[in-house]
Image (tube, rainbow, N blue to C red; front, side, top):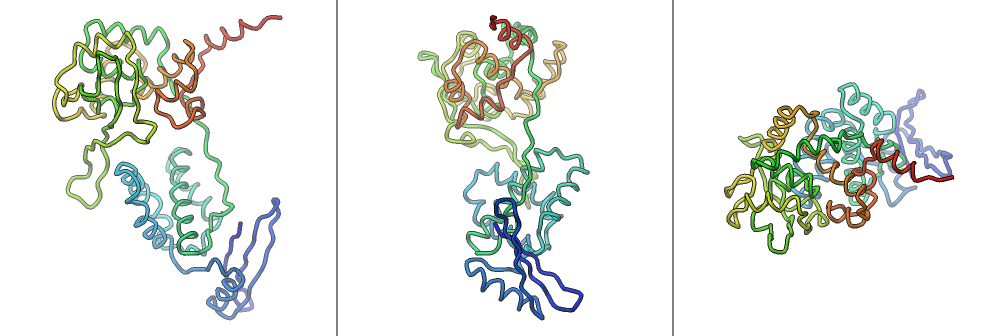
Length: 352
């Protein structure tokens, strides 16, 4: 991996220093000239496959956006654009790619930490910057200043899930259910995401064969340079593995049968327009408060389902497919939580 920097020496000459990392040792090579252009020519001659550039970070990101934005979902594009506009470009913008080094990157990280952004959020921004520079190195044949840069992605934050007794209290509501209870039950009994629950139509539910087909998701995304700042969109699930068929468990059948309508209707709204995930979250929060249950996010129901599934004996491959994950490691690392009761039960299995 190679990195470089050009600076003016005290003797008036310019020095371009390139170093590579090999077996945790840095190997340096310097190039000298009366001007920066002379130094760049010497460096480029030594590394004919890559060039030193005066392009700014903004210029590289503009090039990358032209390439990437048409290849990703609108929701992902909106997420990238928000992080670029609000955080990345205000900091880097007119900095030359040749001036990016580890020190600059760590200053960016420290600045974002001082703004009380989580390490996971900062990590997501680093991923965007890396992607832009990889594209520039591959397509524009410039040095990638982030080659060798290390930023350890943070571990997961522990998600608070409802205990078994708390879940039972929630389930007791299903005897006289509202449409919001149907949404809660869908996530608690199947692990569906909130956007998938809101995007579920009656035609996706086969009561005879007892299956649910997940094939769309609902979310509100930001719009840029438009009169309305946000818009509600209905798209395909977040990945190919997220498009899946889920068997309907016994506890969910009565609720789905009661609220089942015509095929084109969304089951939660009862119309041809979906319920907004934010509305579902607000209603869920109100129910938790009414039932005097801990304040948790709707997504914790998905975690509760996954944890409960492991406890009752699901194999991880089956659980991973029901959750719509691309691999079992993701399921284990993010969605399986072990309670103290579960740990105690496992420990009690140990015999002398």
